[in-house]
Length: 393
Image (cartoon, rainbow, N blue to C red):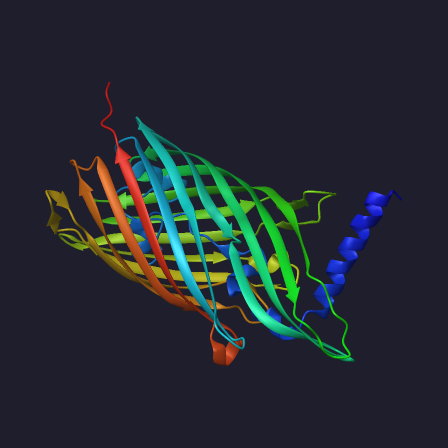
């Protein structure tokens, strides 16, 4: 074995020893959304986010990546960009831990032509961005060593989407091929204070690695709209293996992406008011345990109401309110964590529909301290912009 390989092996062994010596209380410092593959990201625009994350079956154009059949709702070529920022406070350790994330959760272009519509997009799948800093004490047989530790995870898994849909009267059928790609940089550093008792003095320690992800996911879907008042949309999703590869060495593991189904719909109850809702299920329990987390099947519900008779500076100014409830696919126990949120927001549609801006806010929580031992409150802002072009023939 070469000297370089030997040094590398010893370094990895030291990291393993530090992980084994890590106080149990420090595990509680990891955000709830930082385990397993990370936090599921909804590739939806601001309009859908304000309506309880109902990203399919919404009458009128939506740029969400959920159901390719909904592409036929677009009457003009368009481009949309969506960004969300989130702040969260984790409860359950000695002190609350604040963390946050920001990312572009959706970028999409659509182009209708005849009875067909095509789309290309980029969206989030799993977010693994988080960082925490905390103080703790390493307890040894001959004394204690206080320390401060910083952990950072930077990256996630995203989706590159190619979609095609066609109308058959009131019915639309679509298909999406989605390539999952991404990377994750993991790092930690630990600075030790002077020891107490006869414990030895310890120097600073740290380490890290870079992991890449790749896989495929496919989505066939269908939608039906009746009399411009009712719409129902449904999509099935299934995939290949999602493989993780470190920057050095062979693949470290893979999981079979599970089967999922989503159904959504909307109705114009009266003039100016639309009610929307959705239901989803994904069989994540089939992937088994990932590292120190347990996988669970996921069910989700969401819905909201939109009022579009207000105007601002010559443009439409719709108001939206909603709520959602979903389970998270990964937890530390046999019980799935539940995320609940109240949603709301508004839009501004101007230039005769050629430009659009949407803002949504989520206020919610994940987990329940009395039951799960951990709880995380969060606030999320979603902002999206869309531009459309009048086709020229």
